[in-house]
Each structure stands twice: as C-alpha cells, then as structure tokens.
Image 1 (cartoon, one colour):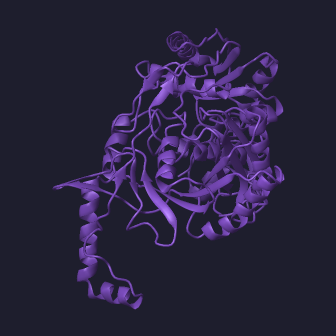
Image 2: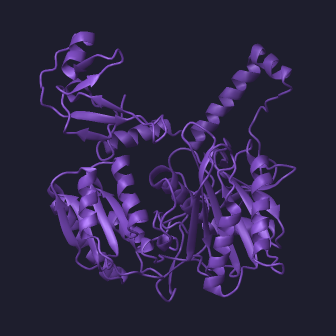
Image 3: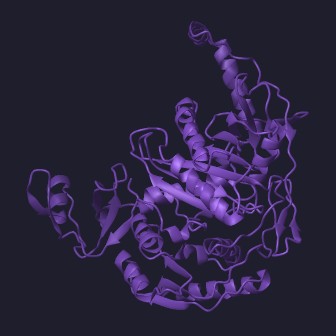
Length: 541
C-alpha cells in the first residue's frame, strides 16, 4: 500500500524513465513488458508517494498509475460510522481487558512449559492483579476574561466549556486567506462564523483579503504569499485540499523563517460540515489568537516566582538518535507567557547537548519580563524511557546546573527535574463491587507499583470512555526544592489543563506538549530554528 502525497499533472503513462537495467522506457511499455498489462488512458496524471523511510535529502518518489490503483483504508472525513465501529472493536474496555488478563494469567499457570520457562528466569506470575491505594487530585478552576472574572469548572470527564472570552485576546484585523477557487463558499462561511465568534468572545475579526488560486501546487501557494505579504499583515491563512508534507513544510519555512508572520494551515474538509463549523472555528480562533501572542485561559498559580520548563527531543525516523531539541519556558504568574528555543543536535546520541545555552536564554528572557530571576525552576523532561534515563540524567542535568551558574555566583534557585515517561504498559482500574472501570482524571498512584529506589508517581489525567487508560509515569530525577510530593503531583495535574489545543486535560503538562510541537516543527518541517520574532508566541500550534 502507498500513501498518496500529491498528483503530478506534468507526468503521464507516456512519460519515459530509466529502469534498473539502464533501459529507457515509458510506463506503458514497462507494465506491458513486465506485467502483461495494457494501460488504456494514456493522458491520466500520475500519483506520487514519498518514501519516508529515507532521510529528507535522500528521499525518492514512487510514481503510480491511477488506472492500476485501488483505494484502501478510511479517509479522514468519510465513513465516520465505520470508524466508530472499528474503534469499539480495537479499544478494549476496562472490564474486557481485566477478563483478558486474568485468562492470560490462568493459561500461563496451567501450562507446564510456560511455568518451566519462567522458572528458569526466576519469574513468578501473580494469580490476580494487584490492589493499590490511590487518591484523586482536585481539578483546578479555569479563569477566563481580561479581568479573570469568568470561572469554568471541570466536569468528571476532565473537560470544561472554553467558549468564553480570552484572558489576553488578540484582534485578527489584517489577514488574508489563500484557497483553491472551488472552496470559495466554505471560506465565506468560515469568515462569517469567525466574525460571529469574535463578537461573542470579545475580539475583533476584520474582513480578510480573499485570494482564490487556480490549483493546489506548492509553488502557487508560495508565490501568492510572497506577492501579498507586507509588513502590516498579522496572519496568513492557507486552506489546502489535502495533507501534503512538502507543501506544508514549504509554507511554514516561508512564514516562520524567511518572512516571519503568524500562519494557519486549514484543511478544506475541516470547513465542510455546517453543523460542526462553529466548534471547528472556536478551535481555529484559539490557535490563531495564541499564534498572535494572546492567551486563552489560566489557573490560579500556587508558585508565582517559579519558571516551569518543558524539554522534548526529535529523533530521526527509525533510530533513537536525537536530531533536534526544543525547550519551552513559562514565565508569568498566569502561566501563559511562553518562550521557546530549539536547536539542531549532532544526531548520533540519545541525549541533548544544547540545554545549557537554551536555559540561559530562557532565564534571560524571564529577567527581561520580570526584572528578576525565578526563585524556583521546575523542568519536565519529556520522552524519557527506562533504557535512556541514566544516560540522559547524567549528561543533561549538569548542563542545567551550569546554565544557572552562568546567571551569577549569587544566584542559587531551587531546581526540580521530572522525567516524563508516557509509553509504559501499565493499566489501572477502579473496582466498585463487580463493576470495573477506568480511574477518574486526577488519579495518583505513588505506592506498591512505584519504585522503592526512586521518587516517582503515576498520574491519570484524562478520561477515556472507550478503551482503557494508560497513566503517565513521572520520575523526579533531581530535587533541591522545598516542594512536597503532594505539591508536585498537584502542579503536574494542574498544568495538563493549560494546553490550549484541548478544552480539557491533556496527558502530560502543557510545557511538554508545547516543546514537543516545537521540536516536531523544527525537525520535520523547518529543519532549523524559527525566526527570533516568533519565540514569544505559540506559533507552532
């Protein structure tokens, strides 16, 4: 199977190429000679698949004849009923998973061969799952509006109503939209809905310049942006008919590196359904406001003189070698002033070598904004695993300590470093009589299954109505702070509500997700850092 990245209208079955034997032939001749197939339509364009198993500078393209292809899989915008039905079968519920595990354990214990093999390794399997004590941390209240006077309460699913005025709104007044001409009706509906939302949520949405184009070629989008982008433009919106990495990367490189400006890519299908358009526009408006430097909501910050940092790394596909690293720092009492740095890495190791310089830049930015340095620094290192934890901690924590020393001999803040592991195969279930279900959001487990030698805990921060929830494992790998485990756990859960792409709790703290978004943008699309003008905004959302 091949994922189609684009259509090449300049190629056809009559196009000639050189095969592995060095012979020149057309696609018509190739399929007739090697497969005995005659292509009937000689004028059809060719489908293009990009081979992602290779590095970006070595990637090859596979050309396919549409006449010889069959569609497979489910599209993003169709067969939603089939997708939901498939999801119910693939995502096993809590009761079903417990029954499956109990049956699996019984089969192992009844099998002499399995028991003998485990005995060789000194491994014994418990007859039943382990009972552990847990507690549920209270969710924070979300504050909206410029005066922080509108309160949204979190429900038992970890969700809240985000259709409220932003705490730091940004008007979207000078912007233009580029779209393929056939989508013009969808674009006008989108603009009308955005203006209605602006009136309700107290931010201004001006009339954009509408720029229809004749085709969806990458060069057409780029030429149009370059032609109409001036210094006073706040936002560039491009509506595309399909997802294509090459086009997306080209647009982002232009808008985030060569000509810095806030930019939003929207798939045309996102605007297709009138019944869901308001909800989609609410999400898009939130992203656009934050890309312009605004903030949507906040929580009551229990540690106003603390800087919270998230670190995430980008690894080359198919390897464990880091090729880029990003650091996001939160500076303000509202936990909404973000500063982000990213750097390329040598690509031959599993830890970062740029953290010292990046943390120095974050601390300098904090000092510019607050006229002082933070009394406490809390770092969440995203993407740790048991196999890399010792190496990462042994090389990265000294970098953070050296960065602190660079800020002055008398500067001695508290430093807390938390490793974030979100790929552990651990499941928790709540049992009330015969009923077994997923734990509530905010459930913390820090005994029995936690390590006897580490300062760690498990946190379930999201609600799952379908399937079983996997907790995130947090390990405090360095601590000179005065924070109790209870305060660390509460702060960690609070920060999961500060990710602006979700009107609810995320799986990990917002700084981890922002750093992850930034490093993916850096490694996958920009292949380098963004322009300095954008570093104080969430331009990568």
